[in-house]
Image (cartoon, rainbow, N blue to C red):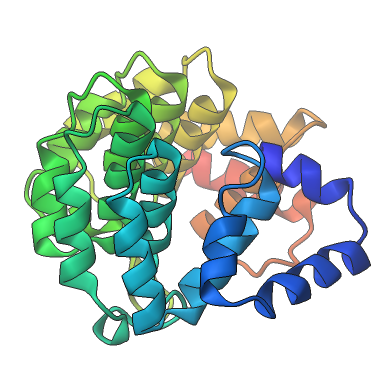
Length: 283
């Protein structure tokens, strides 16, 4: 559970809604000022960032650009946080100031503040234009694991030939979180049509996923099991059945089983176990 999830659970839904309404009523300059309150990971400043992203006006872009040029590192980071998903909720073709935001983020990749560099990398990861992805590819060996995680999470990277080699490399990363996200991205499929999903597959990919089934980090280990099972790999199916029979399975185990078998989300777990065992016998 993330720190923000923990904070959200400590507030009632009414308190969350009231805080959001108060932010939405603020002017753009006041919202930017609110992003600087508290610690960087506190939820209320991030809610202010969210409101600014959704507002997505030329005024918001102007203030975000101004903040990204500030002498204060936290302000620069907040400007980039807003630019990362300016116009959130709209199709990429309708999001405003995309290329300008990418240029600003690239300029901040050599900032003296590690927090600003990380924010710039995440902005590029979210923006995912051709220029942004090209800049991110050069960061796959960056010393900051937050930056490497931004590379692993970039959906736009899927359109590049370097995608699989980069993720295979990041699946061996010293950071457990980077390994987890790289395993998730490579293990997950990409929808290609209604009810159809394409999984990148090769002996090299399966070997990498098999290695992660022994990862000391449980999240990465589970992602590897799910990724193998979805490819009808015998080891992945075996481990998935064992998870579902353990009595302490995760919702992701059920989701993976349903996807493997093309079953609906209301399928009883007993049925999943039975059909997965049958599939394993033929794998």
